[in-house]
Amino acid sequence: MENQLQQKLPNAVATLILGILSIVGGCCYGIPGIIMAIIALVISANSNKLLKANPEGYSDAGNHKAGRICAFIGLGLGAMWFLFWIVYVVILGAAMSDIYNF
Image (cartoon, rainbow, N blue to C red; front, side, top):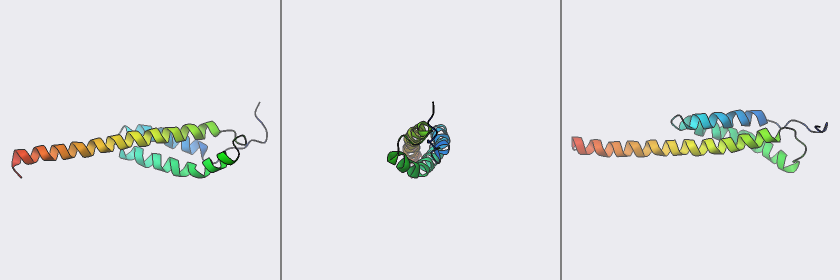
C-alpha cells in the first residue's frame, strides 16, 4: 500500500519520456538523441536533488531513475552515431580527394 505522505516527483514522467525518445533519436543520426538526452538530464537535475534528500518521500522515483538511465543510454548512442558520421565524412573526403586529385 502506498504511503499517503508520498508525493509525485517533479518532472519524473517528462524525464522518462525524453529518455526513451533519446534512445530512439540516438539511433537516427545521433543529433536528436543527444539533444533529447541533454534536455532530460537538465530537467531531472533538480528532481535528482530532491530524491537524494528524501528517497522515500516520492511515489514515482522509479520513473525518474529509468528516465535518467535511458537518457544516458541515448546520449551514448547519439554520441557514437555522431562520431561514426564524422569519421565517415572524413574517410569519404579523403577517398574523393584521391580520386579527383585535390
